[in-house]
Length: 313
Image 1 (cartoon, rainbow, N blue to C red):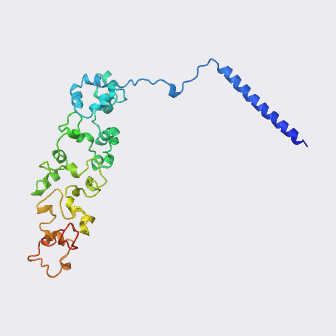
Image 2: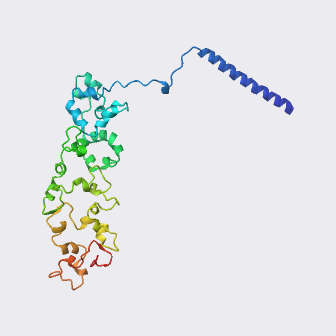
Image 3: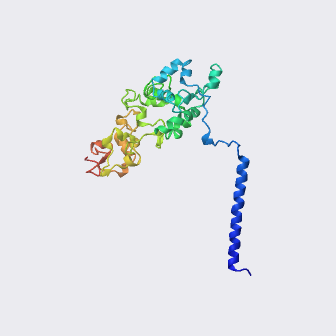
């Protein structure tokens, strides 16, 4: 049996032998590779110029009118960024690389012309505008789902309205699809949309919303109606339940009505009776005579701080 001293000495010699062998192997490999050029890593490879982009000045040579129209919009920043070497490509940011288009003598099939489907066009615009913070719900909107593309309402080159580059002013632009709503705004009692005092986009977010009918909400995330009718908002000590549970449209038609105050029924008591049936009323409320206007007594039907039957504010 070997002594501990001999075992220790044996292990030391093994370690020395391994170290010497590895050193010799590395020296031989170094001699073999001497004079051989080393491959350049990707990080060291010089950046090659993008040969497919021709620049906005080249586009301007044939498309001078379109260039002038872009210069009058916020999109002119694309061309400005191009000249500063920021990696932006001006016209080609939207239409794609133009080298093949130019080489083919202006062949329209060699460049993106925005004659695609609505969704495809929207997806292209959203490569920039999705980062603007205003279009987060665009792909969930009814417009997007039904193939209404950005260029159905906006035009960078031929906009009639400088604001948002709309191809027509509101509400005529919206009426081009929503003709049924145009009839509602012609009724005797209506929101003043046709007169220009309020616009469709004041209540609806055309680029999508988490609310039904793409409705907006107030800054406090309440019903959009409270942006104008703040006196009806509350909170009240005594709440009228339909206001909180069903919203304003439980009693009012938002676009237009043949009834005063945009009511859903011709008289006030008909609206009230939908929830407060005749059988639940006290005997003194004779609906056939003088008690047909509920709001003569229940004046503050939207809510009250002092009266649980809404007699006082």
